[in-house]
Image (cartoon, rainbow, N blue to C red; front, side):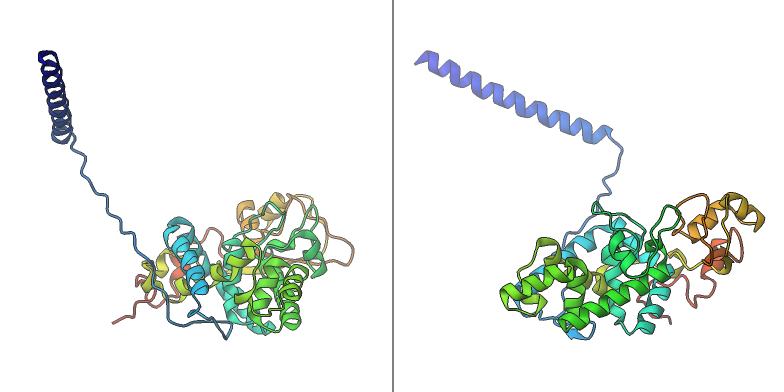
Length: 326
């Protein structure tokens, strides 16, 4: 009995000392560490609309899996701050060209968000070797009139790639009968999507059981549409002065081979860096031009433009997007 009592007392004393030691360490750290705690974060669900459309077609948001799928992509893009912010900045530079071509080609304006979902408005290359703004694989790019060679990759030519994407989308629309399915076909391929339609006897994207990538594809596009068209609702605080605006350029026609693009740039009083930035379709430091072929190269009207000049056309350059002026 006495032995048990000694063990119990020993355990109690040990526990008291341990707690006292931890408290002392914590108190000491708090008193000696001057670093202020500035952590401020809110985790909350982005707002979902009661209704919305894609390319003039209703999205059935009352169906639970449609609503939950859109919610998933909104959560990702609202909390993926650095990537989403960069896309918003780039949109000021590239949307004007994309919107103009979509209109000319008779493709709904909402398809600019497909370009956003595909590449983030950058010339990236996927593991499947899809490349450029609209993510064509080389074989498909050539079918739709884009050159892909050692010196040239027109998948990275915004105007030409956008027109090629329009041709592909109009083909998908004719085959499947809706713009929603055309977008799905752009991702899955006409053969894969047609096989799913034939097997399931369903012609609505929202009701099809598809592979993971295509199942999420339209919802990713819709999430970007919501963020871009309702920036204040999704916590976007950025003004035109912080965006990347178009560079004013002049077009130079090239009808013969250029053996050194750095020397060509020097002769035109621009840097080689500017030449490559404005012509991302060029893949080499030379440009081979076949007989009878002509390339159009963009060069800056004002080399090394001051960044302030790029947004001087904006009426309220320091007013956040979505906020109305006084």
